[in-house]
Image 1: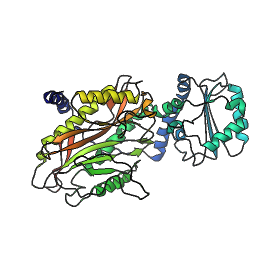
Image 2 (image 1 turned 45 degrees about the horizontal axis):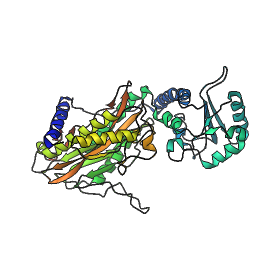
Image 3 (image 1 turned 90 degrees about the horizontal axis):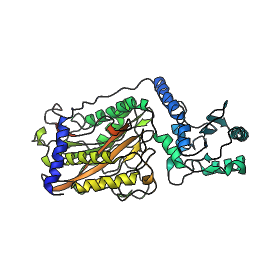
Image 4 (image 1 turned 60 degrees about the vertical axis):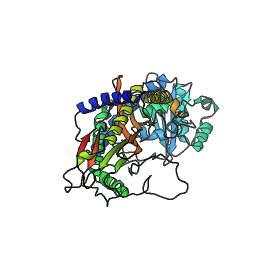
Length: 451
């Protein structure tokens, strides 16, 4: 596509951005721990009730999980009650697609003796399932959490009559973990708003003094602040100064501990800052990446370079391309290929690496690219995109910034949810404005500049 067409696309996107209302995020408090447990247990009840339909969908009669304390199956954490902090003794869950009159579709056993297998055999005798799914997939964490020792134990204790009916159907566990109740959305929006508010305060002159504050200082400010709000986080915040030709590198060898993924740098006027950050509360996780600009000491907030504003427009357009191609039932690799093809046809360059989110930061579901796998992701990229899920639309677009005479990566990540079998929408919003850090007047001049 010729350059004029590229900017025609961007101009169209800019019109949409300019019409959107300016978000003013604020910190959203959590209820008491007791109330939180009630909320989480209500969500769990709704999700567990959906297991029979998942089993029928995938042609499985039963689903069996067993784990010991501190050696839990990955899927256990999405089935447990809010006040369960681990499995107790030997904890066994057994679910059925259908149940005869007078029987249940869900059973739980807690026992530290081999007597539990007598109980299991009795229940299996009553239901007579032809297939029993176990979480033994070698490549998918959410469907591969059965420890090898426990597999050997149930194989031996239940005997050939039942073990010959064992099957691996990874989408049973994947779909259970990935499918989230609609009643969660209100609280998930609040968590996302809190995430935005935290980033907004971190990227302000109340936290950053150019020439003094380091990227690591901001990372640890986020850790301390999120804890003061009675939230937690599922990964160390990552604050970086975006520089030319920046690229994701390999995981460094050795066992040394570091504060974060990038070296500590002092923040200066003229820097473009990037943060990767998420919060955890109520058993849910967020994942967000935003950009900020630090005003030079002799400048004003309007001095955000035009080239940087254009870069943000480009990455916003790439976000829309990916959402448009996230079609339910398509595999992650199909979505990746379609999105990259459209991206390049519009004259854009970048990378796409989206993932499911919810119970886990990187949750159950298909992967739409990885930073080092832009031609497709083996196994995980071949899973279908499921509805009733949350996804992190994570990516970057490249753009040449004339004011810097260099090409920069413009990173963005926002969480989306599936709406009424129709489309993906932002959980809270998406960044179409730069956060601007202006310390020239004692912290009173921080602005948000429209892209």
